[in-house]
Image (cartoon, rainbow, N blue to C red; front, side, top):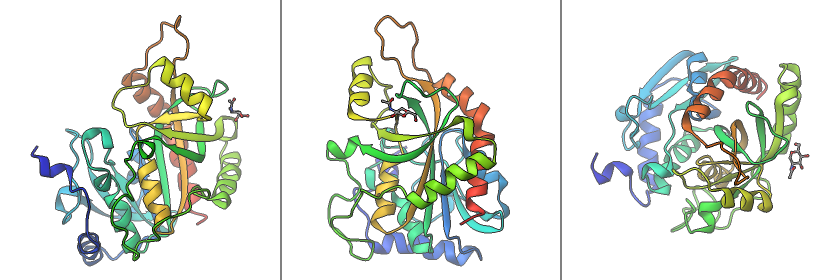
Length: 288
Ligand SMILES: *[C@@H]1O[C@H](CO)[C@@H](O)[C@H](O)[C@H]1NC(C)=O
């Protein structure tokens, strides 16, 4: 794959507009809800009815997936009678994309008229009271790449998307959070629903023991390699955000432990709980 496939450092309003206009011309659907499916959680897109499916490679100016055999599709359709657009396959910073490219779809969603963004991911549990297979409602985040100068809003600010200095103290919508907790109870997910702070690291390495301990001291409950840039861009343009992390493993914080983080464990847990998370998201969408 040539370097240009990883996207530009910045995009103009016209780039996003061109993508959005093409999609609007190719689907009758006008979604108010966008869903970004995390690793192994793309099955949600298969639940949509009256679907219009666009492989990323068909969409003008849209970034392409680097992962071989990984679904890279934008799926429009109806979930519980609500029009939605679902990203099956997201763009991770660790794959080599520019941070502006990682968040490209979110601004396209904004231009499509989307008002609510639902994000899901797989994450490592830092909070010792979390169990593998818990679903964590994201209450707040720590933008670690942002600490290191990788914020998707760096550079020229286009006021058509939002203000120069957007507020992030209300990043995750409280009303949606309350609805999610109630919905989890109703759907029999109450016993494994947690709530906490998600910390993003760039990856692709899993964390060292010292890093995990440091993140616990910082107040993070879960750690992963995605989501935060998309949320920052969504909040910048005024979307409401609801986020869930599936706790796929417990991080190692003990030098005597023989446990090691591995991608296989992540995939197995995701498979076990994906249906519960899908059901939760589906019933949330039905109430929006
Ligand atoms: C961990 O999660 C529990 C239950 O959600 C919460 O009460 C606690 O404040 C969290 N943090 C720590 C450091 O235990």
